[in-house]
Amino acid sequence: MVLSVFDFDHLLTQTGGDLAFAHETLSKFRNQLHTGYQAPLQSAWERQDWLLLRQLSHRLRTPANHLGAQRIAAAAAAMEQWLIQHEDLSLTLYEALTRSIDEFLVDAR
Image 1 (cartoon, rainbow, N blue to C red):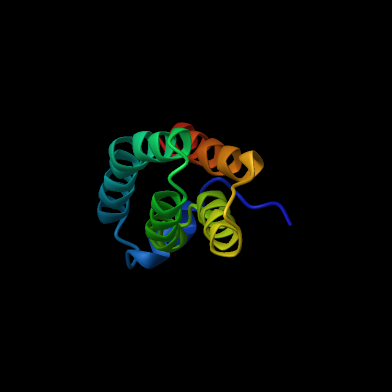
Image 2 (cartoon, rainbow, N blue to C red; image 1 turned 90 degrees about the vertical axis):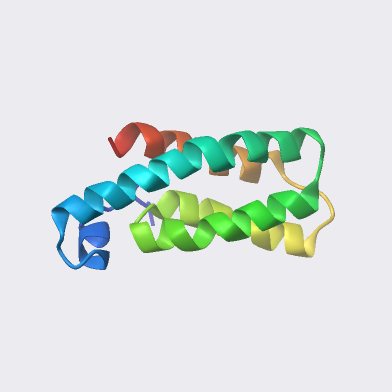
């Protein structure tokens, strides 16, 4: 199953069909990803702060699901689950999450 980068119809449903509110919500999420997640994720990865990575992944998963950012939600859930079960982190999971964020930021303009 291939997940889409972003499902605007899902977001529109979540916002009750209010197009202006959907765009405002999307804009806020994009800003939050850019300012509140990218740098902290990278920093936590570089410092090997697995607890912070798990917390960031957990906090990112829910809003990504609600907004239709399926790849981000799936990558965040996979990273969180891996970190719960392992002391170490697979670079593949980290890259999948950061790549999903980058794709979303480009695709959801």
